[in-house]
Image 1 (cartoon, rainbow, N blue to C red):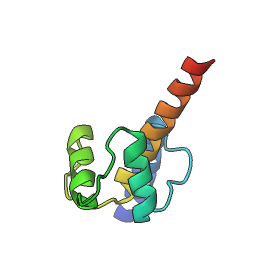
Image 2: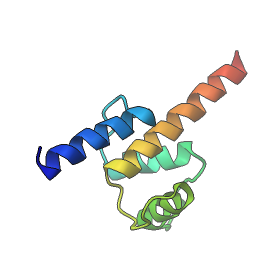
Image 3: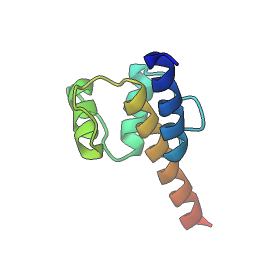
Length: 92
């Protein structure tokens, strides 16, 4: 198996372990802004999206490069979904 194939298998396995069952939303800046707001890190007027992405990455232990790549967007989506589920459970 090639290194790329092995990384794909490992990535899929790890993704399954941490709940990456769905495709992540696109890394569109507006989607990333929305997800950051859902996890309690809204990007304020005049604030840099890259700085807020970097702050999120630092909080969750990712390489803090300020780029909303697949791992960052997966985790943002996952945490936003968990928060939505908790809020729904509290409302019930």
